[in-house]
Length: 187
Image 1: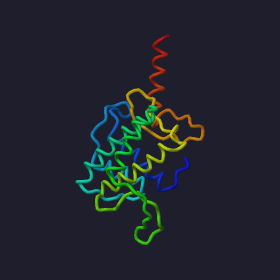
Image 2: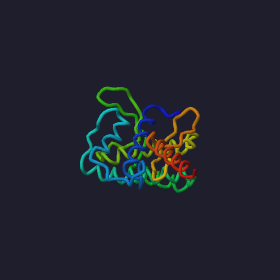
Image 3: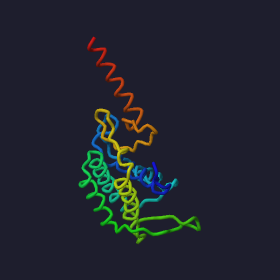
Image 4: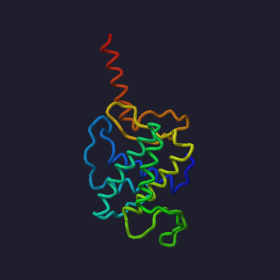
């Protein structure tokens, strides 16, 4: 993957937020309602720290996660116009615009949020921008949906060979066991 560090972290966070709030099934089971730490854990991927997220922002970020999952699913299915329409809506709604910022005297880096006090909007602007960079780039072919039965998780294949088929080893093992049992039953 050729994304710069900050954008790569935001893309990882976007995928994690989408996984928490989007798919109907995760790893062979119906998706359960995410716990209160799901958003913090997703956003930690962008910042390497546990950001504080207010209660009002949680609902907006949950909706944003579901929208990002919809966008990722469209992109994986080759429905680029539908996927980019969802991304563009998030970018428009959050007033995403590039700006160089620094935190607590640290190095300057690029954000895409207006930093206008709308915590959820700021996060979604950054996550949607990272998703837009992926959608408009060569690495889009590495965006995949897990091939395991009853799993709708979207993931980014970062392997050298670009042949990853499952979101996790749990899904890979479940699929292999099912295939083995099917072969044994056919004997």
